[in-house]
Length: 338
Image (cartoon, rainbow, N blue to C red; front, side, top):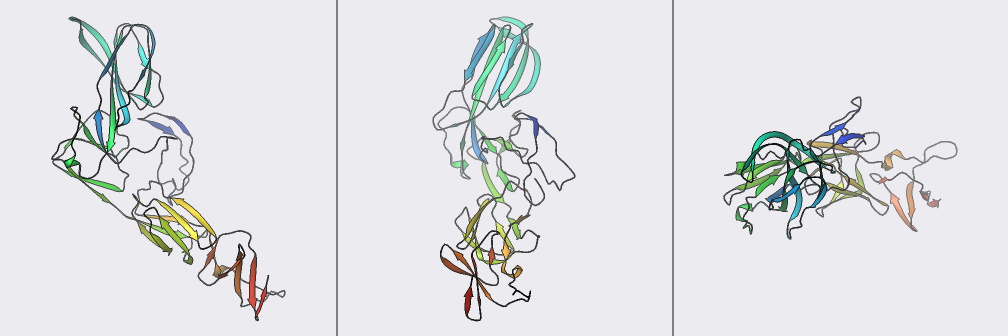
């Protein structure tokens, strides 16, 4: 991501839910890295994370596919998988979006017998888990689900007996303050660096504040852009005239539509850029940059009209057009010339 908010595609060498490896050309004005995992949508900024019932399995040889059950009213988030292998057995998970969290060795009791085991913990965002083993392996899968919540979570009534967590995963411009809440160290890697898990309690309250951002609009030469025939429509439904800058709420108005009156609409998506001011370059040509000359090269003071679908649209001072081929008319000495 460049300093002005535009994106460059950088090849991802390898990645998992926990680590990303990539190469970035630092000779460019790079501001930061924006990671997009294909079709996987963003997680909700505020969600109640509810653990499901543990699923346990025993394997001695071969492979097994485990499907995470669907829970009505809840969305699947991730699963914590523990593989307990009795030496010399070895087991592993071969899944997309799966990462190893840690390995420990401990004595465990199985059917009143004490034995030494290797315990490997994984997190997977896949809803189908493929496990392969060549010896005695005990498997525990704990799925986690989520449901979106609002700021009135202290009034939320749960119909489950498990102990849920509150997950706060906002963009960097969303700030959370919470009262009577306990921060939980779950051992689960944050979905983003600014993810926070809280212990759910009916007395926990969370407030959200959002830092507004200022969007500066410039032309391709990076000059201030003001067009009286260009309008901005936001996601919230507001329609604003195009001035040199605009202050937006980045949470609700990250998609802008730049409409040139009667001519063209340009869609702009503001990505997660954690700065207070960003600059957007729009390839518009202001009327002041256009001139009409006669055959001798002398400037002519004339009104310019554009033929847009059979309608003559005046291009007056302060107006802008999008680069392209137009059917242009000039009004001079009372005569309209094509």
